[in-house]
Length: 283
Figure (tube, rainbow, N blue to C red):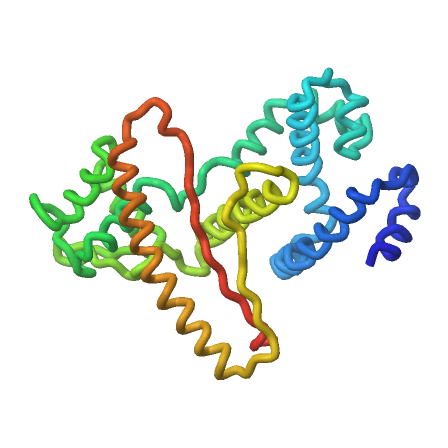
């Protein structure tokens, strides 16, 4: 794999200077990650040209962050050296800094899954309420749920958002939960947004563990091979059962901490715990 990467790199004029062993090793593993991402992009009708164009401001922004971390002077030359962008691209991006900032902010803003609507659904599930609850009322109503989560959001606006993404429906002054987890329809853009937020945090945790020596994040997996389809199905069933049990416990604690921390000046941090399961039975 590494010999193939070198043969590709030497054909690119901008990469004739070569890479360190550490850089080559990182690139080798990044390509493995990119294979699945490239598959998704191509299936969605996005080619290399479109993808590489939107990557320019991403590399530009990350180069600036690294220069600031090193407390070095930000020049077109230093940004170009770190990002791999030519100086013309760097100059263009610098002059369009507001647009670059807005683009990066859009990519990195907190996902909708930690918003008030998500917390309302989480509380609904955690409290063990029935799938159908009255819209209004003092206890066990949709309005009371919203007020427990936030006094700043109007229950009707939260209801409209949950109806829009297909999580609930409204019938005869009752709100009916359509799913027992905050997972939108695959046809909705929100599913991609949730997936992107999950995989971004997963990557961030893993990369932190690779490059940093302290304050490691939980990032582990269990792998087994030479299995039959029957064994795969049994493992799936066990995984779902254990995840449902664990997620309810974590959700209950998270809701309580959200209540405790609401309104505090330093309550600006996010927490995400995820789990995934994959097997090659469909290949």
